[in-house]
Amino acid sequence: MCRKKRGRIQLVIVCLFLSGICLFSGCMPNKEKEEIQEQVTIDFTVCHDENLPKELKQLIEEKKEKPFKLSYQTKEYTYIATGYGQQTMGGYSIQVKALYELENVVVFRTTLKGPNPEEEKEGVSYPYIVVKIQNLDKTISFR
Image (cartoon, rainbow, N blue to C red):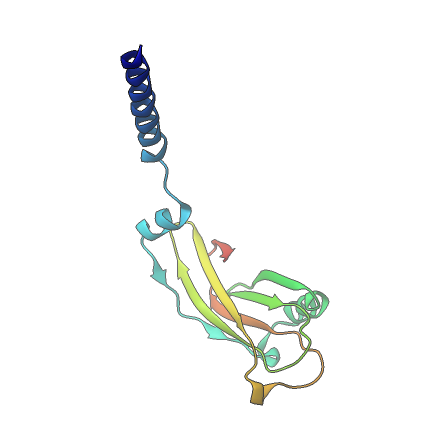
């Protein structure tokens, strides 16, 4: 009787192990798939307000109170913008962590850096960043 139970337990363990291998052998997180694809770094220019197309300035003005992610195309360029919404003080900066091209997509990754204590400014602010790249006719993925 004890041998039958032990045999069944071993069989269950083996089945669970094999099914786990089958389930995870074909699965791979998106991040790993992305790393397998060839990443091509893209040259970009950070744009100041005075260098933005009027329509893009207007879109940013309408959306700046809440976090936003948008892209805007002209014949030559694609503008990629990320905003972090209303902040309770000034002095924030935004760092471009990555901007690269994969087979079907352009990946844009930023991070919001808080102000240093000596840089803190009173009043609300609406930190955002706009970068300009050559028009690649690809979808933008914000990460």
